[in-house]
Image (cartoon, rainbow, N blue to C red; front, side):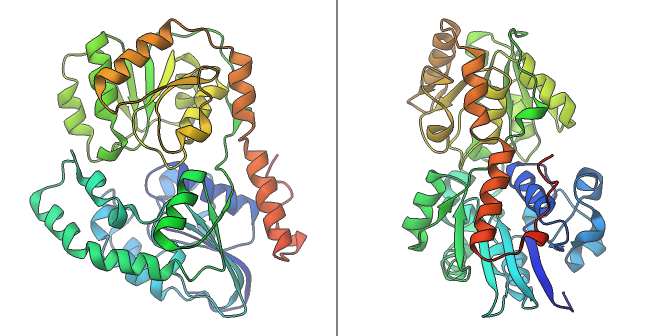
Length: 377
């Protein structure tokens, strides 16, 4: 807990698995280089090279058990801990909130800006989260039992921030519907400078995501099995074992977590990127576009903001494997201009993200010396 006056503090739910939310939080930490970072679990091996561990303040369980991959099992504890996290010494607090960080305590004089990835999925989208998942009966019963309390807590704590910033129009719509508040929009960053534009490919399709049931990676696996197309799946999660069983004997490779240079090569060499689920936003499809590769996406969610139909990708309209397979075959008969794909991705470049946050902080009266001038180099 903080003891002295801090001008700016940053809060994020957890740094365990590498995803879009963690990348946003790290960019915000770079933008505010003197801000302490408060979180629950912090995996120094995975994030320590991008976020100085000396800046990070974790909760007691980190010291007891370390950054466990079973961090989701502690769901009932997160609301309690973040509600108790006292940041009243800070003048400005930015919470990077997957579900819980928005609940922190601030003073009436402070400004609390919450960057919202989505209203709490465990509460509002529980059926989609559990459907087709490998969670057992006990976990399902427990989740449904606490769901009403989580909904009430999520709606109540959504009133705490002075300003909400959503990652997409999709999330802004959920915020309006579920919380009765409006939000500004700042899209997550795509670092196009590190991605090589490629004019050819090695024939495989690519998915890079946390392997959770609602991501519908099973549809990508089934569609590629139907067509006999090679699929490369990057990422880990509780559904990996069931997906590997589904793909047994087929042209599907599961690579698990890969280092960033390897992932960038995979983007550059794939034929197209597959997006079978409903995304809150979706950085990976834009990374594929930056590499000159089209996206085959389900027509819903964040894809509606990141995919230009017949220019940077195509949609499929029924969330089933046959519809996705038909879209993959259709994409193979189309010609996509790599320069157009790249230019589209650059509209979401990290420099745009940083500039918009700088402007927002300036509008809130955060002095320029607090904001890192070199964060976008």
